Length: 442
Image (cartoon, rainbow, N blue to C red; front, side):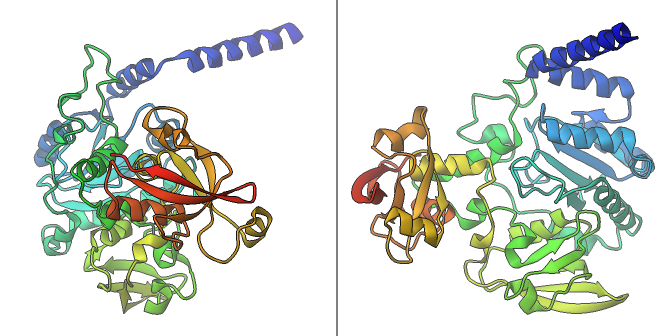
C-alpha cells in the first residue's frame, strides 16, 4: 500500500513540477486552446461578440484579463466552471474574453489599468451597463471582489438590459470622454513596438500589450513632453475607502461601514445603505462607484446620490473636498514603480512613526520618509548612483518639508519639477544630515 502512496505522490509532484516549468508562452497558448475547445467563451473576438449580440438580443459580457496572471485566472476558472449560481447568469450573455489590449477601443473600454481582471457589461450598440473588478492590494483580491458580488453585478446588468432603451439617458455617463489615443498601440511609447493583434505565429507573450502598459504610456506621454501629470492620472479610479466608504464585495455597492469625519460621513451615508445611483448613474458594483469618482475632476464637486435604506429610497449629496483624491492609497499599484523612477530615481519610501523618528534623530513633526528600497538596475538605479541608501530618512526635498507620504513626494515631483533636473534632498543617515541631489527622469 505504501508503494502505491509513494507512486501517487511522485506522480503528483512530477505534474506540479511540469506545471511550474511551463513558460508564459505555453500558458497563453494552452489557455487559448482550452477556452476555444470548451466553446462557451469567445476568445479575443469582440467584433464577433457584437455581431452575435445584435443577432440574439443578449447583452455582452467582456472580461479583460492579463495572462498568465495566476490570481485572475483562478477567479476566472471559478466563475466559469465551479459556481452553480453564476453559470446560468453567464448563459444569458454573449461572453468574450480579451487577453491582450492590442487594438482595444479605448473610447469604450476605459478602466483602471492597474487591474488584471476587469469586466464590462454592454449592449450590442456599445452602451455600457456597468463595470466589475476592483483591487486595492498588490496580490490579494478577496476583500474587493467575490463570486457572489459578480453574480449580483450580472443580475444588475440583466435588469438594466431588460429596461433598455428607456433607461439609455441614465447610462450615458458610463462612457468616458474621447481618449488621447484611440487604441493602446498608438501611444508614442508603444508605437512601433506592438501591433494591433497578438502575434500567435511568433512570440505571443512579447507581442501583448498588458493593461498596466496603457497607464504607463499615458503617464510617459505627459512626462516626456515636460507636462505636469494630472491628478486624475496620478490617482486613477479612487477606491471608495478614499472618501470613507467600505463596500461589501458580495453585494452591489452596499455599504459595510463609514469612516468618521470623511466626505461619505458628512454626506450622511450609513452602514447597510445600498447606493442605487451616484451622479445620476445606476450602480451594479464597487467598480461603478470608482468610475463615477474617477470621472469627477473638480474639487468641491457635489454628486447627488440615491441610497436604499430600510427599504426606502433617500437622497444624499456627496461633496468632494480639495485634494480628496490624495487620500487614496496608490502604493500597491504597478504604476507606482514608474512614478518611483520619474520622481525618486527608483527609491521606494515609507512614512515613519514618532518612535522611529526619535531613534533616528529626526526632530519635529515634518517630513520623515524612510528609504525602504533603492533600485539597482537601469533608470531605477539613478538615486542609488546619486548616493542614496536604504535606511536614509528624507527630511526635505527641494526645500519642501511637508511631503509626508511617498505619494506626496511623487505628486510634487511629477507636477512641479522637470525631467532632467536635479533637486537637493536632505537625508538623515546615522544621526547626521547630508545633502544629496535627486535626479528627475522621464
